[in-house]
Amino acid sequence: MRNLALSDDILMQIDKPARYIGNELNMIKKNPKDVDIRFAMCFPDVYEIGMSHLGIQILYEMYNRREDVYCERVYSPWPDLHKIMKEQNIPLFALETQDPLKEFDFIGITLQYEMCYTNILQIIDLAQIPIWQKDRSDEDPLIICGGPCTYNPEPIADFCDLFYIGEGEVSYNELFDLYKEMKRANTYTRAGFLREASKIPGIYVPSLYQVSYKDDGTICEIKPIYEDVPKTVKRQVLSDMNEGVYPTKPLVPFVRATQDRVVLEIQRGCIRGCRFCQAGMVYRPNREKDVEQLKTYAKEMLASTGHEEISLSSLSSSDYSKLPELVNFLIDECCGDGVNISLPSLRIDAFSLDVMSKVQDIRKSSLTFAPEAGSQRLRNVINKGLTKDDILNGAGMAFEGGWQKVKLYFMLGLPTETEEDMKAIPELANEIAVRYYEIPKDQRNGKCQITMSTSFFVPKPFTPFQWAPMYDKDEYLRRAKIVNDTMKEQLNHKSLRYNWHEADVTVLEGLLARGDRKLAQAIYLAYEDGCIFDAWSDYFDAEKWDKALDEANISVDFYAYRQRDLDEILPWDFIDVGVRKDFFVREWKRATEEQVVTPNCRMQCSGCGAASFKGGVCFEGKN
Image (cartoon, rainbow, N blue to C red; front, side):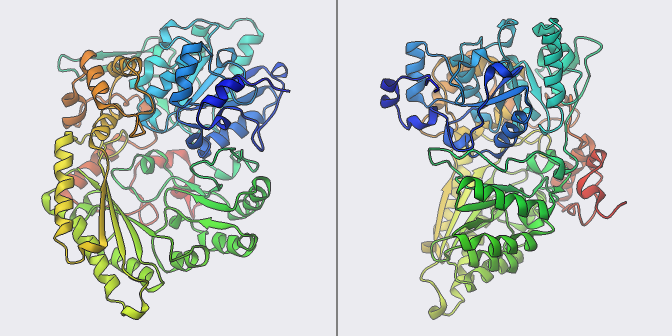
């Protein structure tokens, strides 16, 4: 029987103690003495968020299929437990065995969001491992990070031993084999392993690269300190989605997770090419999973979990070529057992509405559109490929089908945005409401409710907008006020609602997204001052972050507000994601100068470079 790392007395004091005890349904159990490598998989946020993450479940399954590896899990302790662990000197532990993380070989941290960076330091600190990479010894675990934020790893490079760039299914086995060989041959040293690991495709070892700067603060050069260390790190891609490992017996949490359902990943990548979207660029090319395999997975996962909902995971589910066949199968074979189907990322068309009418309570549910911009001009700038007619026709079909609630998602602060573009957001919402009230009164479900939500645009690495400037907090709020004031002027303003994102969080996110290694000191100072769970509005403390940035001599103007020159060396330029920089430059100019739309990948190849991966949409129809 396992001994829990936390006493009953502590468990009784903290919120949701089930977060920390493990032993969930489908948890994998091994004897740690029977394996060569112990790997702690960490999601640097609370349990309910981390347990909803598909990538963790995939890697947990993949690693544990190896008999010589035991992969366990750890999530960020909530502030109540964090305080107790610091006061009582309790080391952070893994859920499966409840053993301290400092006894493991690797701690793998997934980086989903920049606002979780202080939680990375929380994990390392509570594990009682030196926070700075340079201070670790051969006896300390290796800290390896993966996930979307690794496409600019530099702000946290000084805290991590390695980064994995790309999809985890490809190079991890080679990394594990190298570690085993060096341990078995008794030749392992931390420095020696890191140098050899840097030669594995997709592995970035920041301590083996030197960054120099110009007098104006921009980067002069990023170069390896040894000749045998690669100058560039190439993103790893699973070319054939049918060959990847998939968890048909996923973990079922004790505490209700954010997404408490079976998740079917139907494809990776996107054909659309929205110029603000990092995922749509760095996950190229679009690759589909075989529909027969998905049908099998769906039945196995429902049987192994007891979940009552199944969700299709994709950046743009409507673009999956076998979507009608898959959805009709799920309705016919699964819904009869009281299972609901969740269909995120759908374009609102006749097929989608027909499906949703079968699987949703129309009177309770709302439909979601993501126009991203209110005016057609700005939608062309961002390459959204969505016209006002598309939006109004989709809404009209929905209203005639019985819906009366619509959620609309937009961004403020996009490149070239004007006041007319801002006002166009509530004007478009009003036109949607007008479309609703064109339906005869006896055929409506009461008043319509149109909810607009705006986030503030954050330029991300490896997008055509990576050179764009941001605005300060007051300017973002001024733009939100324009939207709010214009909404009140609309004929159907009583049917409209408006929400907007926190502006100070947006500025910090943008600073961290495009920062360099100089930001590490500010992140450290913020953590030392008590900053954790910055992604949670209840815990984000702008004053502490302002203080940390000031003490670290970080200029927000330099990192967030200035427009980058196209020939500037960017902190992430040593990474090869497969999409060429000249493509991003071309798309930036098409957006800001020509304001024209680039066709999607199935309509016409844009020559972005992703064909180098030799798979997916780039090779559809070719022998």
